[in-house]
Image (cartoon, rainbow, N blue to C red):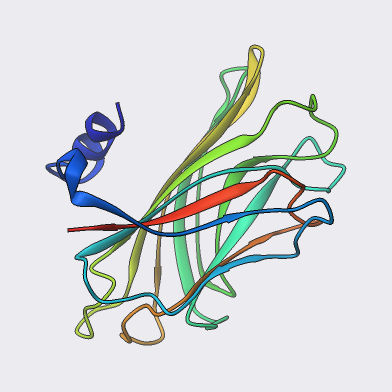
Length: 185
């Protein structure tokens, strides 16, 4: 299924054996204000982050912020999102402190419901272009829920990606939220 989605939104998908686990982070009982992957090597063409998450925020759902290399200026994004009621919305913005994406469940959601996220960071080592992100995120709450397709990029520098930080827009990551970083050959 993942390879089918990747093929639809950006060309041919890598073979299953082309993914290599780099780092995994699972939030402990105290929660976490952010999740960071650092000291990312140079052995791959692209990076992918897969995760499940939930926030301590009291809203129905919340967003997650993505920053690279500690840079907190000049991100741009385009987003298409929909809720369980069939309402779809498109959104775009520039000059942001991060790339934000929808669909992490908040503390008011049923306890067993976590949002799922797949983030692609394309050509992360290239120093000749801005870094581009593709993000698919969502959750199902037994017929309601939310899903979002987001594309974003940095527009301040072309440095290779050496660190990625994920932060809830509101609250903290709750216990059992988990993210894994993969390299794609």
